[in-house]
Length: 328
Image (tube, rainbow, N blue to C red; front, side, top):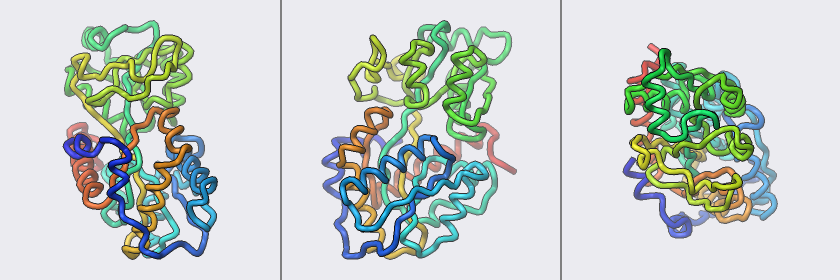
């Protein structure tokens, strides 16, 4: 996507363009709303932000994390929609904001909220069992030659993992049988046990089983390798994983991690949170979390953020329509 190419640059340069505080600040506790259950990637990131804000005294009011994962996250989206004008609730969002309204027909559109900032991008990796094919070419050849579709494990149905699996089918001509699980951790367990042939978990979800030598990282779905060069396994760093394009599979797919306020807040309130999350991205807690979770640091706000969202929405909508994942 064009906006990703333009935006992913030196983090400090991106931060320099953020607007300054316009004088408003919260007078009651601030709630970070998570559209998922406990322990997932969004929950972990919200708690990192909570710790970074409190430890570095970035605001005067307490920060609370509120888990609203019922109905696959629809609870959180509708909660934010119903909170118009309330500047003390901040949603930490991912591609769910595009996908869930399409797959579940809920009356929600991300444009009804107030964009604050994109704070990271989540990269996905193609993984197989350590006893499976050793390269992407071998993996695709095995999938094409199989008498039945390769089993691909993922988190939930009609979500990012499901869409990425369809994207792979379109690019390779191979057939996959997508099996939804409750979490990336469960998808990892199923791959280790050879109940599935592969998954497209993000780095953190397969970290421990990769470190244990139970799964193999075949490629990352990005146009550039991950930046982190510290060894994670005995022999490999995240940077050592080739891009899928390098391996002949021209698929790029990144998932945003973004912050939104409810609709109809004031520009001063929006500016306060832009400044707050800019400061969060400069903390040691954020930097450490980016490396440990192998996330891609980024900071987008204003027109750049809206353009990114529009393009990302269009891509995901197109893929979901092609895959037959849109509710009719």
